[in-house]
Image 1 (spheres, rainbow, N blue to C red):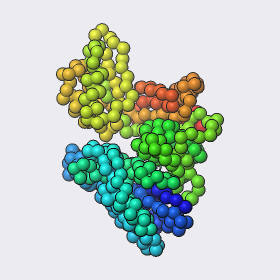
Image 2 (image 1 turned 90 degrees about the vertical axis):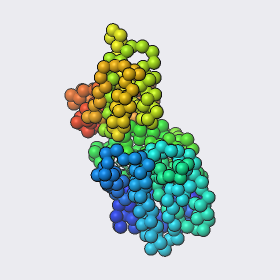
Image 3 (image 1 turned 30 degrees about the horizontal axis):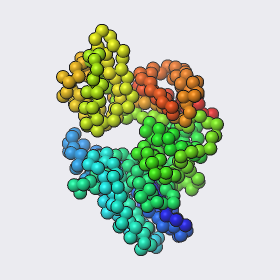
Image 4 (image 1 turned 30 degrees about the vertical axis):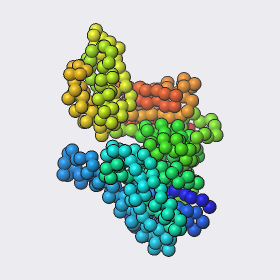
Length: 401
Ligand code: ADP
Ligand code: ASP
Ligand code: MG
């Protein structure tokens, strides 16, 4: 008995049958004597379809109106799931993100949760209702609807679990947990029983879609242990927590992100302040920069090369081109046909063989590496997008038996 937060992703609620399947999972949890708060995403491909609808109107939609549009997807799911629960005889009520008290910052389309006013939620729980909350959305100080970025329902669920001091936070999805690679692409991938917050944060940030990276960040910050499991196949999933038992496996997973772009600014002056000028422009536009490479000076010039999320490439280019006189340079180039492939596992720095094993696997497939970045817990390479799936399979084979 306790308070359980259960989150169900888009595939898990994609149609009538799946909605009733979810309603039965929730009803069973409820009937076992628990209080239940449910967070749901938009059904199936709804969010992608809404983005497409906006694209039919304009190539540059206002971010405020995008959030107004995208938030409707989750609103459909909460109403339908609540109806299904009521059909099963479970007392339930749906709440939008703002009704559930989600206050966010102003950053439309990638807002951050600032606080959750749980008063309404708690009063509904006190009335013995299951509360079904729309994920991915909140309200900013101007009382405008915001969304939390793709995959943001995971973050809504973890934030609620933290705010309500829930006893468990379960993330139900369409695979049976966190695997050593995307199980849909790599059939040999194996399910992990446990993974640490730090390792999961890297995997999520490096492209393993199964959990949104901000949700893992929050889970770590507030010590919310997560259970990732299937909404279809009722078997134990993966536990994400602070520390795991050492299993002797150094590499926890291989991840691919093919939504990256490489921007190269060629022949900038080799003087102090250039990086500051370039990256502060991008920071002002809220654009995350990941791998940064600077060539050593040739004569009086050097090249500055870095990656940004593919979706931000055009706005990065336009702000850099508009301010080019501030940092100089010859040419600004963008390459959108690349991908980032990474291996993740704690304690890599003390195992020098990891990098060479990874590079050997790529060499055996004749895959060229454009950029490399390493940390204590991961090694990432930027390669051609066309090589990415082959690279993941080869690296997975090299590390995981
Ligand atoms: P949901 O709609 O439930 O939020 P997502 O589509 O966002 O689900 O995430 C689940 C998907 O993540 C899986 O279907 C799988 O293809 C993909 N995935 C990528 N990497 C991994 C991994 N390492 N382990 C499990 N799933 C992964
Ligand atoms: N519906 C949103 C998306 O597709 C949020 C989510 O699924 O978590 O990104
Ligand atoms: Mg998701």
